[in-house]
Length: 305
Image (cartoon, rainbow, N blue to C red; front, side, top):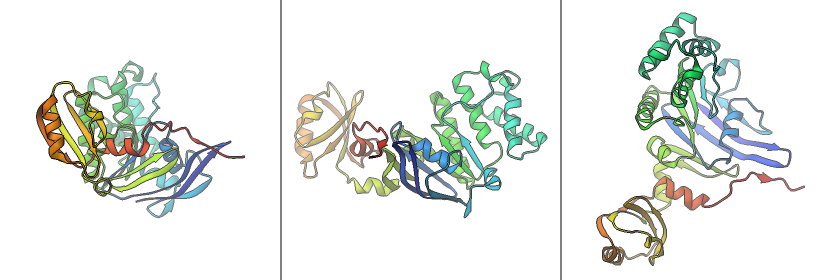
């Protein structure tokens, strides 16, 4: 569906994206992940021909981006792109007609999606009267109202409460099952881990990790431990053979050294915590992200003069 090869973009003395390549197939959710400022949005804008790459190529179904391919692509930008003074229903119909949908069909589809997102009573209201979460729903509707084959979503869960995050996740799975190719761009690793089959991790404009998520996890081994406990776990990062400890409220993920004796670790934990669960697990995408990016400042690279 989408083939991107060797994209590069330089601004003055800063390289924003360097040699980014990726392939997204139909019926697949592809995670374009990385910290803020890593080059994800610049990559997306080059894919959409919003900005022209200095090098590289983009092909959709084997064809360069054009007016014909434009109408089979749906795009949800991270920033708001709605006409605030317009009525909600008029906004959706307008965006649909821009992508070739007849007005009456656009109206029918718009009301179906507004019903799905529980926004029917907002249809005749102005966009500016909506909450941020509801504006995000409308923006998502605009991105798929023309039934695109390639859907590109930049931080689609932004502003949504947990209930609507579940609703959007369900819709994304429906689009996947319908054979759509989906790019899901985010800096939230937990979301990408739940949704994506393949990932491309970008940092400082460079691809530093890519492939099927299952294969990526295998590359990082099985030396992670998930524990649940009662007590103060602040000491966990200082334990012998613990390389990294990610602490949460009453549970933690520990990354162990390769030869760590788990029996000794269980005894050490039991002496200081009321241990409810101890489980060897694959590393989470979040822990892999931290090990690859860590405290990197992700500023774009300067070009040496």
